[in-house]
Image (cartoon, rainbow, N blue to C red; front, side, top):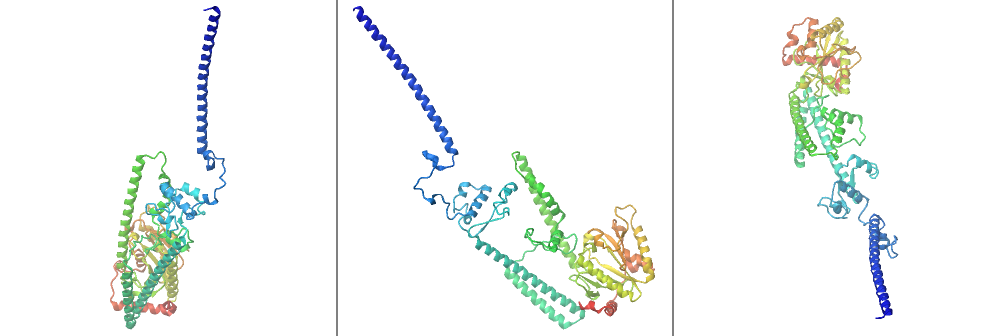
Length: 547
């Protein structure tokens, strides 16, 4: 091989090796570029997916331009015709009650077979579960500024009319029952007056009318079904109790009488619950620190409250039976074992009568309330006004005979529910002038010197209801209409029930047995005493017997 051929061969080898290295370099750089491109494309897609997930406009999906297509109809995005605003509220309420959202938004579908009429125009009324206070404040504007009450469906008008009709029927039934009870009471009052007058024909006819009325009432009660007996609560201010409407009337306009009934029927425990409820509701909030121990404690508290409720119910039953027994055996209740021939005259809230046994003095009389009340401090204002009316009449009547009246009441063992009464004893003017000094000395010496309350309370131009709290034992004496004095009894064993008669008997110089153990009288003497007193009162004011 010549030199020329060797040079050409070497140039060919060098050129081929350079081309191979260039091809290899190009191949290497091209793969890197493709990998970079793929990486950039992946990052772009990830960003697009994230942007699409946050995008609320559905027309940006699948490469859209954000605008609806031209062939899109106007009704494609309308809500179903059977869905209204009330149904939306129902869905919100059921979501608060932790109902499954998938079931809740199936329009018109039954959810556990319980709220099938809540979505598609049912005629039922759905009562939602009470919301938490925080959530209720947020939704108060949406619910017409009334908070969370009742949710009605589209056709709730029929439900409302049916509910109002049922309420009217129930109200009419209660009115009818009240009228029947009033009629029966009127018949009994007429029978009582006829027995006092001795009209046998009228007594017989009234008894037949009452029996006929009771038989018709029993038949109607059997037709309507079994009656439900409601245990009433003991009233601390008055012996008789009011049946309070169980419906919450806070949203209605209550008058003074309704508010007074509601306040009287509230016990100490209920009064405590009213102020304890906000603290209790705050303690029941479940936070992130809620533990199993808290759950166990809450269950123990609930079980304790149920036991307390059972205990309160047992106490109510026991008090109710004790009250019924007291009313049936009371010798001063009109419907109890009252001897009717001792009654002089009846008022609207009280009656005037004579004592059953031999009186302390001549014309000794009693002012007794018709209702079973334990003391004058627990009476209503209208009863106290009528007692004041009797006092004025008796003072004016005995003034014509040159006598003065001393009125006194001894309220003891109030928790045992005795029937209170105010005694009136007419005395001469000389004894009357010395009476305040005698009573003051007797009250100062009746109990120990160490006591919590004042020994004497001035009753001038004041009533016992405004001076002595309800439920306290006390003794009060009035000297005519010029005032008097009161004394709160702290040790009942030191003050006898005949304390007032004992003081007056000592002033008059009477025997001890005349007030401690008064003698019984025969029926003729009792009737004569009542007839004489009635004649005196009728001559003084005959309008009293025309009521």
